[in-house]
Image (cartoon, rainbow, N blue to C red; front, side, top):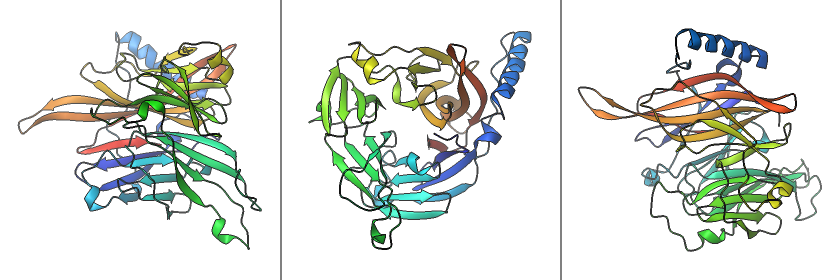
Length: 379
């Protein structure tokens, strides 16, 4: 995966049907020019902490959001379903293609490189914003079309009820004879895992699916509340893997340069940690228990005690670089009102080889807190 230049952020204002896509230049905001520059900056910060007796972690505060590249709007009839707006990066198209599916299952794709929008087929299920999306590339197996290249599949698992769907964006070479087949994209419903059959969401803050990852070229491993199951994408069949649960939050990201998977600890844990795992098929078959972390690094410290973490998201930026978005709530009171603020901290980190092991290098952190506006997701 090539090293990315931008982070895509979806921003939503309370009470609005508008979702804005903002693009953050990574080299200006979350990363130093080199890992050596980041290490030097961290050493200076640590020296200040030691001198001032535990001086808090330096986080640039209240940054202004970049100008919106495009605004997405949902039909008025779906305005109340604010949690059913799903966004995802179409990774195999590069860092510029963002897909949006509204509560009415209408789907569109924005290409930032060409500043163009295209409509695609409707999806079969509406999806909550925190659905787990996993990318898999495989050879096209249907038909014998000249110029056809790879299938790029985005497998989307709804955390609410386990609805499962594939967004296939197969790239097809240009052809004067078959122009209508160029970049033909479509949705396909997939069988739900056994724990989801007959399941109805009753508790808003209790997701059915806990974590998932692509463990080889054609297998998705997904953990539910009562255990873990594997989905074979070639046969579209689920199988029971064990009664254990994957030890990370939402999706784990595979980094080919390091031959490991990386995931975050759940928000309920007291530490803010990035972990590395071996989720290869051979490693998973050797043990009947949940895989344990091979490395654990804290990426945030010195935060105010009144900040309560409520969500976390990991974005793979390529070449061992990640952006970690951590969402906090903080109570406030003034003469006019009492309420809760949502703070979003974006942290850039890099994992590199160090001798026989790995080292995490922390780059920069920025905090965003805009009144009545939240960063709904990062891509």
